[in-house]
Image (cartoon, rainbow, N blue to C red; front, top):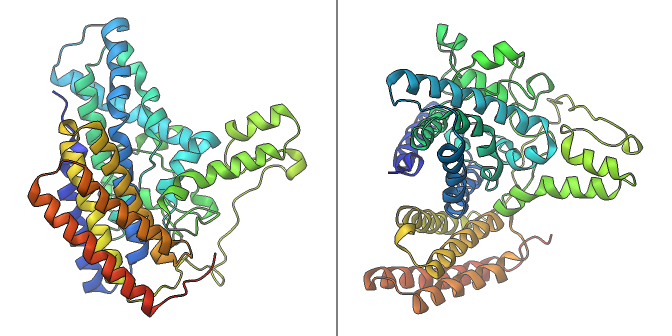
Length: 405
C-alpha cells in the first residue's frame, strides 16, 4: 500500500512553522513577511494539487522497470533498507546538482530558490513541474531491484528531512556539520552571493558535496533568492518566468545549435552574439532591496481569509481526491489555484485583479450549485463566497484605483 508521507506531514509542517513564527516575533528577528510567506505556501499547495495528476503515472514508471527489468531479487532486510537510503540520497544529490547546471531543469527548480527570505515556509515552496523529470534520476535503483514501496518511503523521508533545515534559528550543529545537511549548509545553497551559488546540493548527507567538490561553508552573510529577482507573487508566473527567458533567448539566436544549447547549458550561458556567459553579480549591500510592493492594509484580512479558503480546499482535495469524481477534482483544483493567484494579485495591487476576483467568486458559487457536495459543506462554502463578494465590493469602494501594470 502506498502511503503519502508528505501529505500526512502537512499538519506537522504548519505546527513547526507556527513555532518558528512565534520565536521570530519573540526575538524580533524579521525572518517572516506576510506576502512572501503566502507566496511560498501557495507554491506548496499548487505543487501538491498538480502532483495528484501525475504522481501515480510516475510511480508506475519506476514500478514497471522493477517488475520487468530488475537485475536482482533483493530481500527487505535492514541492510537493504540502509543501502537504499544511501542510494536515494546519492541520486538525489545528482538530480539536485543537475537541476542547477542544466537550464531546462533549472527552469523548474528555480521556483524553490525565488524567495528572498529563509524560513520554514520556503521548504514548502516547490516547483509544480519538477516531478516530471526528477524520478528519472532514480531509475538505476529500479533496475538494481529495490522495491518500489521501499523506494517511495525512503525518497519521501529524504524530502521530509529537508523541511527543518530551512531555518535561520539554528546556527551550527557541531560535528554533525561534517556528515549531515544542516541549516547552515542549506542556507549557503539558497544564497545568491556568487561564492554560494551551486553549492551544497545534499539531501540528507553532506558527504556527497564534500566528495564531489561542491561544498561551501557558511561564511559571509547570505543574501537569499535568485540573481534576477522574480519580483512577483503570482504562483503561475513563478513557474513559467524562466521558461519565458529561455524561449526569448533561443528566438534571438540564429544558429540552431545555439537554440538547443540555451536549454542544455548552465544558467548564465548565452550565445557569443549575446555576450557569452554572464557570471552572477556581486551583492551591492548599499543598493540591495527586497521585493516588497505596497498594498492597502485593509486588504490584509481579506487576503488571509482567501488564503485559508485555498488552504482548506487544497487540503480537502489532497486527502480525498481518490474518492472524488474527475469533474469535481479538476474544478476544485482550478478554483484553489485561482484563489492562490488572486492572493498574489491583491498583494501586488494588479489592475486586473478586480475583474479576476469577481470571476473567481462567481466560479466558486457555480461550483457549489452544480457539483454534488454534502449539504453542510455547500452551506458553509456558499456563505463564505457571498460574504467575500460583499467584502470585496466594499474594499473596492474604499480603494477604487489599484496601480496600473
